[in-house]
Image 1: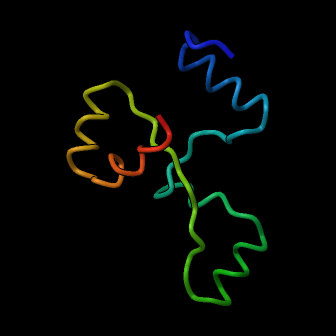
Image 2: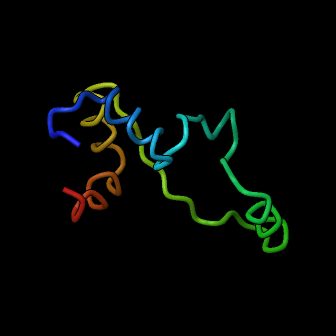
Length: 80
């Protein structure tokens, strides 16, 4: 993988290697779960913890999210 990949190239690489799925809207599409996770949810009355990655349209959107959502800032440490 090259450091100068475009976002499209990076995302297509992730899809081709099965590192990720397609972008979804949790509000409209629901959580992408397995049947086992759905059963766990019903049995325990709560959702399992899911990791997610927010895709930003540009630097301004990233900045505005980070101003409004502190975990988007402090969870970044260790990944850069």
